Length: 343
Ligand SMILES: Cc1ncc(COP(=O)(O)O)c(C=O)c1O
Image (cartoon, rainbow, N blue to C red; front, top):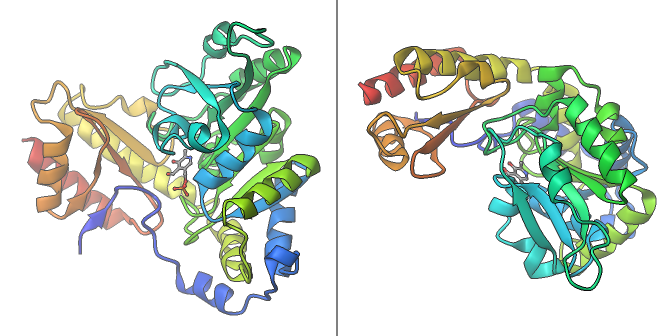
């Protein structure tokens, strides 16, 4: 069996999760009648100290439903140059909501509040585009699972809000940030107007994200979710998987972080130009192959021939993502395969 480290989305629901799905109480969610989805939305909102939550099938939809409540057509959202919102949602903010974006560069996705604050131009008048929101990704996927320092988030949020600029958090992997940093979920909630979280990444649910915000914004997002065709019916089946994921799979993320660190240390010991293992804080290992004489595509292809699936995300950038279907023995095997390919 191949070892699949392309993403933490490749996990299969455990038997316990399947049992929870099978016994879920359900109702028609378009009528607001599904008790399991209602309790999941309330539960996640309470965890983050937000007023309300909304279930959506994907993290992309959760992000898009939220940012359109903050940014009107023709206005601007600022975000990191490698953020999922600008790199991997296929221009949805522009295509559906008329949102323009500008990006700031960073070292591995690590937030430096000065970058967006210097670029932001609120109330720009009739000539320039007005900045109305800033999006932060935590952890930062294409940055290599980077945990954003809460002090920097707070500095950015305070300064942005003083200038009337709203704050959005793409928290697809906020669970990993919480486990790695110890920052309470409610602390994240204080600094953002809108938050998206995913249950289908490290937490192992087959589907499901929650949009979080004020009651008014979530009511607006609910209308747009239906307008986009994602009003769903007996989704308590999916929400039950989400409850199970929150009950069982948050604290164990530390195991994924330890395996990612082990892979990073082994690769750096072989070739220090590949990765700085001190920067691997969560479950993602981003490899820079430019000095190793092999392209990311060739490295991924050679690993695949040897039974290890990884992602080539740029000409010389590859990523490996540890997850709950990846154990210690597979970790040792993955390291051995990569060292063999690199030798
Ligand atoms: C940081 C981040 N945000 C959002 C998403 C979107 O999630 P989905 O694939 O469920 O649309 C992803 C997906 O991997 C992600 O990594």
